[in-house]
Image (tube, rainbow, N blue to C red; front, side):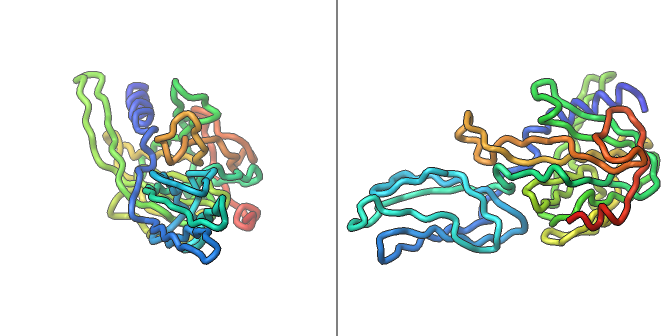
Length: 289
């Protein structure tokens, strides 16, 4: 693997980091219901798998107030929030708009979860850690793996498939000074604690899961896609959304791609850059959730 190839891939994933999860509309339907006591229940139905962040904006709100404008919709349907009248003898007058994006805002991340590497048991993989200059490695880190073989990709943790779709890969050729862009496939799995695993670089004709499907750790997701020349390449990370108070328009929050603990032949610990690991799996990992 040449150094130049690695730098090109690092450049690509740094550029795409801000757009890991595209905004999606129409997935959550909000229904306000006026009650006899002048309160208003904002109920919802969700038409897609996984959690969604609902960002609500009141153009007019009279005789009530709403403290939180970004809320999590996790069930297929339910009560998102309730407006209470300030003057209980008067009705609440309001008009609003809202948008949705896939994710779960401000989760309580379970630090005791151990992940498995997304390859078959016994495979030796060399990990390249991808970081960004403008963000601390503790808050944004992905992992790149090259392989001579078109390996099967496995889930790293129990969860639900919530997204299968395209991402744009832009590669910069240092010799020709040209940028080429291709569409590749990725799968996103949501976990019980509101974190997500991103599996990027799957063959579009060999993805073996569907949105809404439950997976365990070491469930087969699909095959690696082609990469540079004779190599196959694959990138994965684990991330969550946190509230970004500085940006009111960033309704999906800031994505934090953190470094969880992985089980390898070296034991349980963080993955280190340019280190080789042997993929390991056991019943304690399978039964931890």
